[in-house]
Image 1 (cartoon, rainbow, N blue to C red):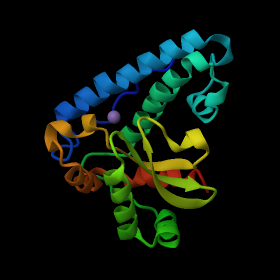
Image 2: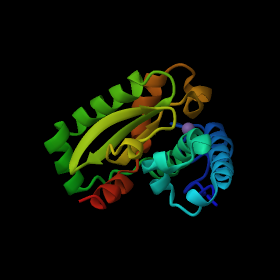
Image 3: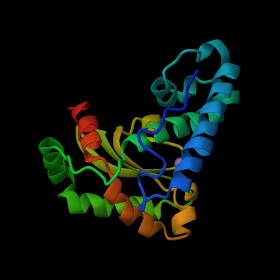
Length: 203
Ligand code: MN3
């Protein structure tokens, strides 16, 4: 059974960038629902997927019985994406970008400003609901985005080390339709120590 991870900080920790009410609903209702629905789908799928780690399910959706495949994709993706997302943020942000990751960002993307521009554009232009990602893909950093609760694990598109949820439920209470303002503000709460730690696991 999959379980909802605790937030690594209080609901109000990311204010004024992300308001407490949004965090409470996002974690306690949206993420919790993905976990519950994922568990139901896995239970219905039976022996073929029982006990499989989430990463294995998401990178091999073709092995999930067709009747549960969409539910595992949407809710398993939702569980994995949010579990990562919470850890990538912290109170007041964290400036611990490692020298290794900084140099990879320079090498592959042209520097931190260029990363922010490319990542922000991916987040802003994702039509409807989805995610922006910074992934390590065969040793190279790349910016991409996906729809709904899809993620790069599903099409062997690399391992995410930075993620931004651009579903309206992530920002609408505070920013309404101003997604660009949410994206720009969000950099202030990025936990660069955690992003750097994830990068280090890929090299
Ligand atoms: Mn969300």
